[in-house]
Amino acid sequence: MKKTEIIAHRGSKGTHPENTLIAFEEAIRVGSDGIELDVHLTSDGNVVVIHDETVNRTSNGEGLVRNFSLEELKMLDMGSWFNSNYKMCSIPSLQEVVDLLNQTQFKGLLNIELKTNKYAYKGIEKKVLDILRKQSNAFSVVFSSFNYQSLIRLKKIDEKAEIALLFEDYGENRTLLNQRILVEMWHPSLEWFKSVDLDQTSKVPVRLWTINSEEDLIYCFNKKVTGIFTDFPKKAIAIRNEK
Ligand code: G3P
Ligand code: MG
Image (cartoon, rainbow, N blue to C red; front, side, top):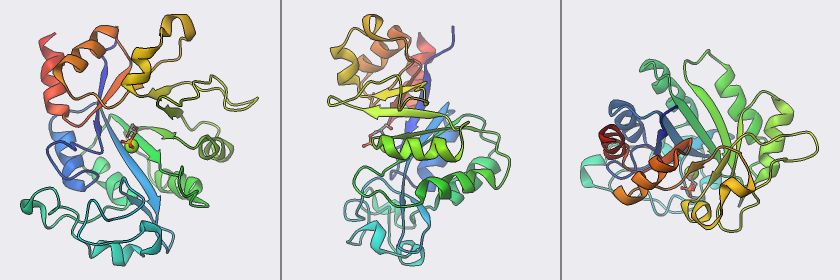
């Protein structure tokens, strides 16, 4: 029986500024099985790693990510909002994260969440795939999105791309994306998972988010779910090891 994968949500989000290189380094250092990150597109067509559509919450700037060029975004401080020790953090491009994973010989799972549910970011699917195809990577990749059209576009470009449906209470827990595309994995919220009897509904494997408390972690490990997303990968690994 495989152990439940521990996936660092936006890097080690609970201990470091989310979606920055330092948060991903920490996730790798503590031995996370996987890393989750969110991507958007800049005004000059670069794929960048940040959670929100705006820079307001996680930087010293203001405005929509899509209205900044990569160079302009790079000038923002993405760490001080979390802790003044992280003033030097800047927004990473997806390419920089891929480079980090290769430099550290990361062999786990990279989950790229396409944040295309508010802005479709025309062409982002191909750009993301092109970045991953540039070199051979030792890590594996799964793509997820709340926008299922984005997942269909990915599959049309690369039918081997592994996809997962993201959903919460309004979730469409489908097993088919369209007549041809089979869904192999669900990434639902813990709340949704607790509200259904999965044995009665489907055998699609699940990775659940966001699992931070000891009680929820133990619940998920006992349920033997495929994976969990957590802001505290070090703590989650310690709890899993105790079991
Ligand atoms: O992929 C799981 C989780 O990241 C989805 O929600 O808002 O944290 O991107 P969010
Ligand atoms: Mg996410």
